[in-house]
Length: 181
Image (tube, rainbow, N blue to C red; front, side, top):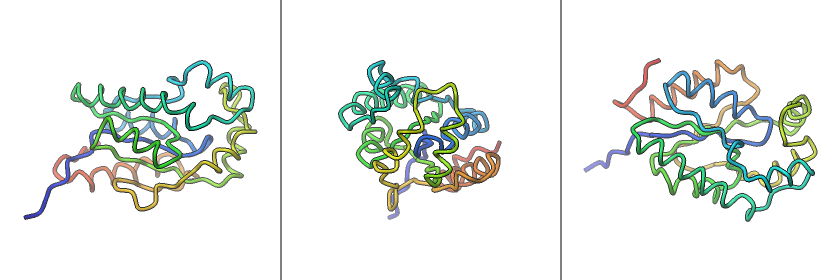
């Protein structure tokens, strides 16, 4: 007897700073009619101040933030909606914390080079994450290789192509629970 996998009820768009998480999450949530959660908006003030000062966050700094995001995902899913979260989710244990709130969670990993991430972060003027912290993001990154429900996308591709890939992956993964938009 074959066990049916539950359909994904939420997606985390993940990767290092500057990979395009927010842009992809916003466009994907619009395309599938999901509720978008911008992970950066949930950082506690002390985390924001550390990053503004050029100090990389530790696992301990991130833990409460990740638990809060896990709870936000769970609330959206419990309300009957699909959630799309923009969150770095750099390490497997961070992703596992997010999975603790929603078992039916998928991840779109936006893969970019350090050079591309550094260039993009350097061009932003309205964000608390300085370009000096990009290197620490790559040091912390544990790509989600071998993890279930993960799409690895080239973050250098045009936004529409990434969204089309993500929608195809979503529909392929969810079978009869497809979203054709």
